[in-house]
Length: 523
Image 1 (cartoon, rainbow, N blue to C red):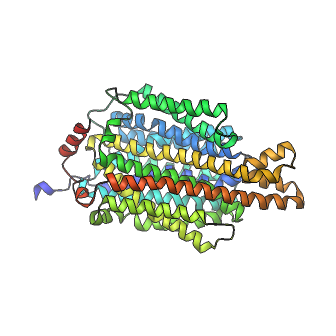
Image 2 (image 1 turned 90 degrees about the vertical axis):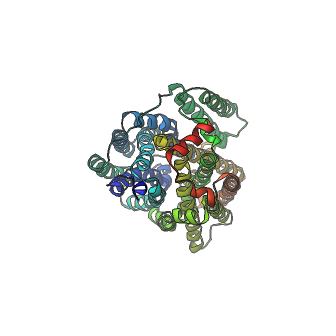
Image 3 (image 1 turned 120 degrees about the horizontal axis):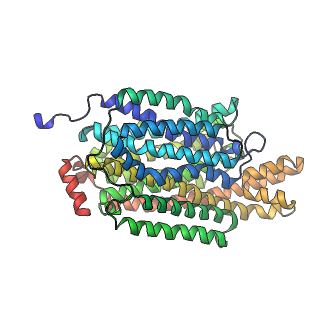
């Protein structure tokens, strides 16, 4: 009986609750912003942001977040995970205040980048602390609760943001982070134990700089390509240069002793396959969240609050299925559960291909519910597979890689699917806008929100422009959703080929020495 004693922390479930609160503030922010996109694009009630500026308001956060996750994970391992969690929460709260009172799109983008700095300090240590305070036999259940909190925040954000936008100005959606941060700081100080990696790695400054430069260059090129065409010289230089820098980054990381991204880890199938599953899921899903907000608020005419409520089935599905996904993995294996989850998310994107301006509300609710069920059965088994493929002292590495891929995939999903959306929309709307004056034509061609702004100033003649903009946007949305579904098909294949099956899944809870041996072999 002694050898089977639970090695977890006595207050582990209370600690998990604190970590969930800390996680909520990071995830809540991005989902709140999705509902506010339409308002931010309004020159009267918002900041008059263009579609590319809206994409950067999201991606400035995710790129800084992703670029610093590795280093902050190492710093947390070295100087204390609790300490870094509290620093990250404080930075996040300060940046939220700056975002709420931004006076221009540029200020908002800069404040969001600072929020990414705080988020990068928060996210990796949450999973690291979970791995250190929970016995391996309970880790899967704890990660299921953690994943459910992610899903809950994804859907609570739009509802809460919509309610605030009904009664207050757009900046209120950022102010909601402040009380959550205060509660989180107090709870972390009182309950979370300090922990460190006894053998922390070195900080890879060159690698961090290369990853940030490469990701920003690639994303900038993709977004600009959606605006000006992918044959544009600026697009080719920035996007191509970003790819070259990222390739050099991978080469460099494979040859140094203390890399920020240990590419040798990807030789472990039960590490690399779930990483791919998570990345492709967020690539497709975050792109859908980006354009669905415009569809619901402009094409369908729903208010921000009504739009938020339409995401409720997604939250319900996460709450129901994420905590149960660990039991599903034990019964059917991580391979089957993850492949089914990816298939359900792909099915929801296929559903968007057939959505039009008159689609019944119940069908929209069903699509969001299916998407939520799918994501609930991807995040928990994939994250557990990642974390259990590494020894406990490497928990920060697994957490950082997992979250970095998720954030990079989200940024690229918004950039690439957003660029597809913009390019198809422009090609569809241009025949209608040829008679408009130059500046008005440029605004109407740039995005559906721009077309609505031009139509509002055109009087009765603007009705035709609104109708054409809706049709153009629907066609563009179908192309973007279809592209996301095709990309997810590769994730399904990766899960079926490389994810551990039912028998292998039972081997996840092995002594650390076995996992460390596997890691050493892969290296």
